[in-house]
Length: 221
Image 1: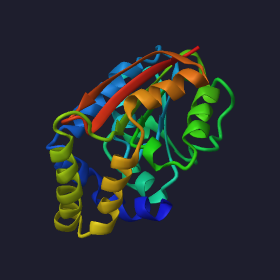
Image 2: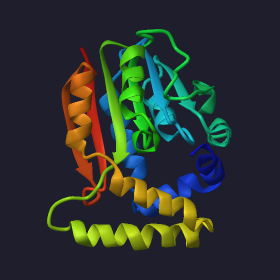
Image 3: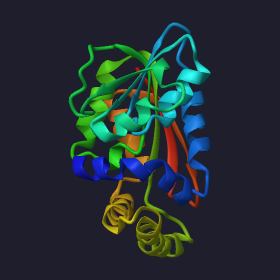
């Protein structure tokens, strides 16, 4: 997994733009808005990648200390040279073993983390551990399509996503993995149920882009 994200760092932003028809940046802005950390607080952006959510949070909340963390060094190198990057503290970190004290952050954001981890329960428990009581986690994730258009969306994901990987990034195999991991991942309801069992409440979500993406939020008890 680490190797895939190291390899795709150079064209990660471009592929996100193409695959979502330009919607990805808008979703990242919504994630930052929903996090709503207090002035003087701390926000952790996990799986920060090239820093889109972290940089948006830093622009939106200048009185908040923003940390962007990722396990792929090449992703972080891309993030560090973007405009405004000096406002963010960049950390090399594994989401399964976060190097932060208990109740360190007022908000946590993340983009496309959960479908890529081996221990979903453990990763969410780590987020619960480092989040302060009353703090909010906001998740941007892909989700398996459902409903009457599921066969059409499934076909599109199996066919179009790997093709775009080949044409735009010259990397069909990494985006074949993206397609398969999305279709095999939990539904928003299943993720919400897990969050509730761990100790989150006020859980909600909105799906986006024909049900293939979701923004999900929850508050730590």
